[in-house]
Amino acid sequence: MAAASVVPVAYNTSLPTVPDWLNKGDNTWQMISAALVAMQGMPGLVILYAGLVKKKWALNSAFMALYAFAAVMPCWVLWAYKMSFGHRLLPFWGKAGLAVSQDFLIPRATLPSTRYVNGDFIAQAASPLYPMATMVFFQFAFAAVTVILLAGSVLGRMSIKAWMAFVPLWITFAYSIGAFSIWGGGFLFQWGIMDYSGGYVVHLASGAAGFTAAYWVGPRLQVDREQFPPNNLLLALAGAGILWMGWTGFNGGDPFAANVDSSLAVLNTHICATTSLLVWTFWDTFFFKKPSVIGAIQGMITGLVCITPGAGLVQGWAALIMGIASGSVPWYTMMCLSKKLPFLQKIDDTLGVFHTHAVAGTLGGALTGLFAHPDLSALFIVVPNSRGAFYGGRGGVQFLKQLVGASFIIGWNVIVTSIILLVISKFIPLRMSEEELIIGDDAAHGEEAYALAGQGAREKSTYNNMQLQNASGFEL
Image (cartoon, rainbow, N blue to C red; front, side, top):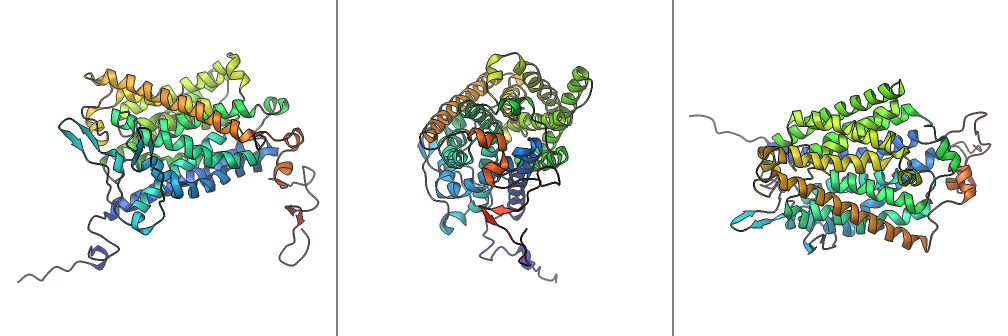
């Protein structure tokens, strides 16, 4: 007689911590993806911003990103997660609620409003094979990265106190609407808008809101606008590298499973990013006679942004075309058009978030509406027969839907961001004082990023005006 099979303890699904519905592989991949996306914000964007700005703003820029990453979490679990992915309150907004109890976080994840009904066709609500806690953390990372990206437009002059008030308000009244409308089961989701991993929800929203915030906060000092050299390009490259590799989880985690579509999304992500970086570098070399490290970083980012709405929906050849487009169109708007149009010249978008995220995100959404393959769309989109215009049928309608979806995200973020900043300005100045703008980090935080002998060395280190001592009790 054959010996009875023995199931190893590690694979025993009768344990209370391993319910029947839990897929350990999916849960592992989703938590890794969440960690990769979170690392894009902290430390990725923190050190990218610190390196790209002028020396006197290195600390302030890094702190704005660090604060935003931390401030989003309590908002997310106390009310914003359910506003983004919970039960429907309005066609564009979910019902606020807590996401902190074990009764909510331990059971199987579900996005209740994503159930799709059209006549006799019914698609059940998304319910991946891992606990809700994994979903809550994964989606938090996206929300945090979005508001950090927005910060890139207002570096070098926005009051840190105004920024502290802005972050929770923007997550509540701007981000949650876009997330619910497109991802959480809102009207754009039900309509079949294609946004695989946040070309609209994250990048177009941050670009439109950032550009709007730059208008209301006002420009940097003229001397800073004219001379704003990066203080540490090697540090910026390290941050850009974390951002790039983190995109593996950003796009690879959005099928909510470790499946064939997630693999395709990861490959397409890097095809588009590398192509875009090379094309941007080509244009820099062709027109300015030398390649630029900053340009390469910008090209990398535009490629990553452009592929995001279609990462798991397009074929590899389409990812190449999208990389060529994302290395060209945002390059033109940033390097040429922004120097010709008075409107773009007037608004001081410090790191060019409008070009790298709003333009690239809109471009990616539109190209997804052209190149989304029907078979790949069926793996991800609940609306039957979804496809890009390139594949005929109702694809032409899909392209128009993509433009309408982009218009909604732009319009909502421009209006709501303006209202939030106008309200804040009644209580807190949006800009630093002229003295603080001249001094920089030391005036804003009482600290400096660098203290090199003869180049800004400070006689004494302080924390909130208290002199610091080392472990031996000696003054520093």
